[in-house]
Image (cartoon, rainbow, N blue to C red; front, side):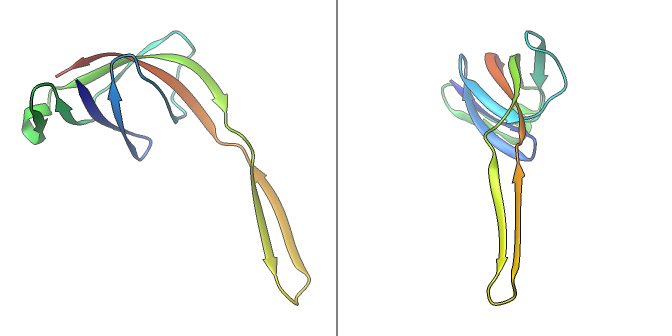
Length: 101
């Protein structure tokens, strides 16, 4: 059984027991959250649209963190322009407990 959920502007295919990294969500480690924006559920057959309007996915926050640093380097040849910048994206690791659909 799997479900497709949308959070943080992205879509994730999840099954029970999976640990996924999503965009930062409010909450501390150990708190339970519910994803209401379920796009599809597959148990025996695939259900989408109005069939999954009441479906939810229950999950638990495993940890909050920051990803590895990504280096952003801008360069214009023959102009002497160099700009180096770094970015570390915040994330939330979530364990999928139950798919209700």
